[in-house]
Image 1 (cartoon, rainbow, N blue to C red):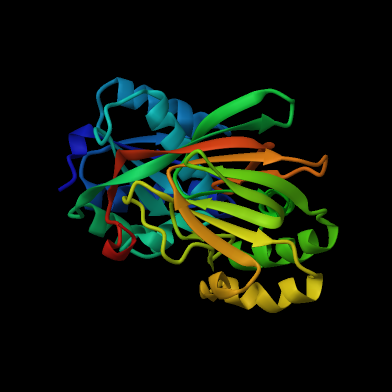
Image 2: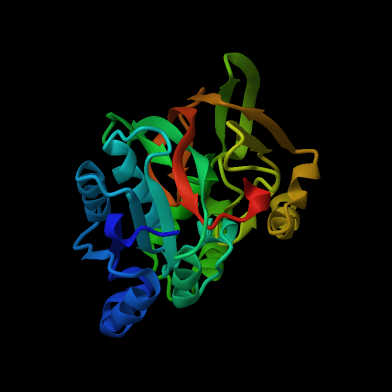
Length: 316
């Protein structure tokens, strides 16, 4: 059961095209009625949710709930872990209110923010893994952080750049679908050498490589249909480069997860992944829907790093 006195709710007012901010006066009392006397804080800029999460965890609060989408959740996770809590000491929750909604597909409470709040007040919290990742930033410096869901290299980061430059007025799924079509035309396939748990796994000319803690990305694409949040392993999915007509034929299969049976798709599990580009073509990186740079990259599982409210049993 939720401890309201130890809970902060971080609210992204620009989520859902600004709807959260516009309707917050009506939302707040309904959320207070469901969650109890929690602390509410409105974010003021990009990166603020991360700063606030770090602050409140260091102040001793043990539950952080995000009101927003995948981007807000990513900031909150990075803020929690930047405070260096003991594994499993902090609980994370999501009240879904953003354009990007892939992580919420692994939660029980659905897309309605008020239904989610009512469920969350009584929901169990389960330990889950988080991924750590280092990569090459757009400024040429090595960066590092954490991811909750999926990090990828290749076309995924280019799709992010197109989506994030758009208005997203068409919603998450269609925005990602259109951006994927555009990226499929302009993307130059990267060539990557992959090492899994210290063992070489070949050099691949790729459309995309997904390192998956969770299952969904790209507006409902089921990249890793068998991934679990608490098994101590990533599902690593290599989608080799294929002609455009082959990629187009396989697009629908991404939404069912049946793409993993295609001959140009390869899946392995590992706790430590290294991706090294071997040509000058950039392997654009996507970290939970953000596009902060390119490979080379190194990723490790952080087992049981946080607890998650109201996860679906089949993803644990």
